[in-house]
Amino acid sequence: MIRHVVMWKFRRDLEETPQQIALEMKSRLEALVGQIDGLLRAEVGVNIKETASSYDAVLTADFPSFEAMEAYKIHPLHVAVSDYCKTRREHRVDVDYEV
Image (cartoon, rainbow, N blue to C red; front, side):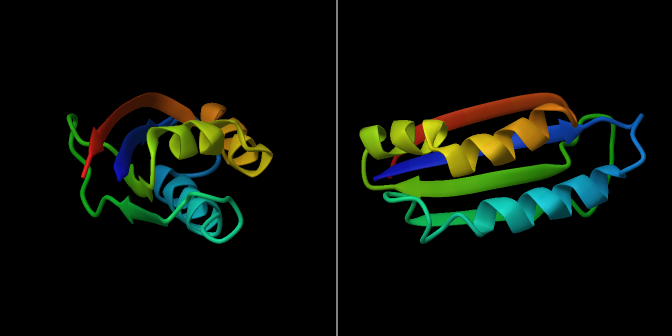
């Protein structure tokens, strides 16, 4: 199994607050479970504190294989969420590993 972890720091110069963006990302990403083959689990955590070094949200998603994860990344439903995020994020980091 592959675990995909992504963290985002959202922009501070928008009408939406980082907290609002994080909650919207949580709603959109977690709703993809059952809609995209191979996405076994998706959980988005919204940070409860803000420091200079902290990120605003984190996604942990599980896939049965690397190929399933790669298919998820280009699936139109995921691309729509990703496009929303790209206009609101300041920084993004990720890591993928075998479980």
